[in-house]
Length: 117
Image 1 (cartoon, helix red, strand yellow):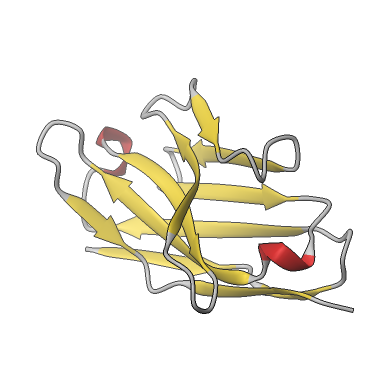
Image 2: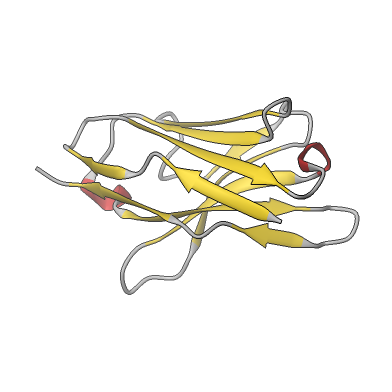
């Protein structure tokens, strides 16, 4: 079982990044994926979540209107498009996949996003 994030990096304020999370070893389409982030000295927080079919999404208030979560079940991948990035978006971003039926969940290793001029 693996969740592998990619796409992080250094970007200037106002810039964009697209994170990807590739799943393997389990039935990705049966899971509800989400993105979390953790900044230094802070607790991990939920950023965005998407339903199994990709119809319903939810976002933290701090990213609404700037971030978009999406999924491609054919590619076993979930994405996070991040626009209008701010320095306060700097954090390690983690992919999570949760089975609502069993409450079993998996985590990726995280990818660093740094927003700085």
